[in-house]
Image (cartoon, rainbow, N blue to C red):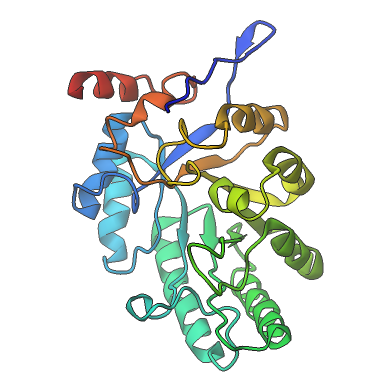
Length: 287
């Protein structure tokens, strides 16, 4: 069932937030990656994020960002050997040298692309002792913060649900918050993905408010099928209103799999003043 989100009226003005960024690894998958930047602009997006830029030369991506004038919000540090099932290295003892090399590669791309945030993936633990994994994780995150000390780059930690990635080290936003409390660094933030958080505990309104001062980035997708956020078990209109009331200043990444095509699925965005009405025009033209 598709939900119709009601426009919210605070006194005399419409909702001015949130701002939505297209995740180019998930959206526009019918197009080659470098063509997705222009497609996002034509749909009305003003910002983008993606998973891994590393198959492409940083100059190529930088040129697309310059041409489209899109804001570069976030990408991930290298995950290790993705094809062999690795999903990050930060919490893996004995992989410290590989992790540090991956950070240097990420920072080369940061220099070219100038993202607001860099996400550090923790990794799948396997039979690693949890205490050793935590110690390694803390040390490696401190290393990233030290390597970026002369920048304003936000380093984000994302809790990923254990259904999609069994054995992942970081699975709840409370666990992420405890890491932030331990390291106590102003540029270390939670990457709050409501899709993962709903699967790992729900109670999204209260939990979002509880960790709100620690949030650096938000992502959205319907639960359980990870499609557009106008269907499924969560009413995201309420959560968008909530973070607006909390005066969230960042972007919300659209990290979902379109149920049909990206353009046909963008109608849910048409009510938000911060999103161009061109997205709705595009959808009507292709229906």
